[in-house]
Length: 65
Image 1 (cartoon, rainbow, N blue to C red):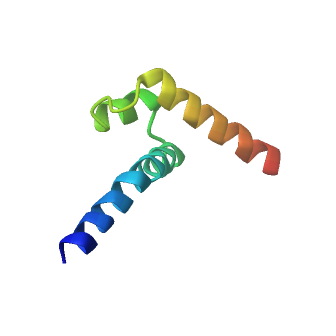
Image 2 (cartoon, one colour):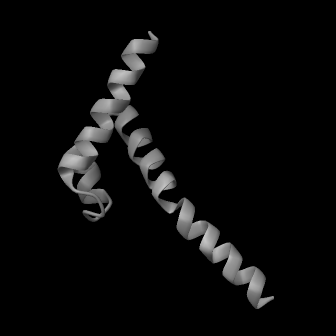
Image 3 (cartoon, rainbow, N blue to C red):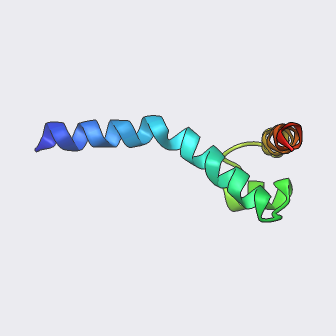
């Protein structure tokens, strides 16, 4: 039981950055601004980093269109 619990906790920890980035991009797609997102994630990532993620995401979306 302990081994399974530890393995699950480790998996969640490893995947957390990807899940947070996906949530950031989802918020941006809904119209939230990088500064708002940064405050909502309690400055886990800097405003500059969030803005860069959003900008890169939007630029990638324009290339597909």
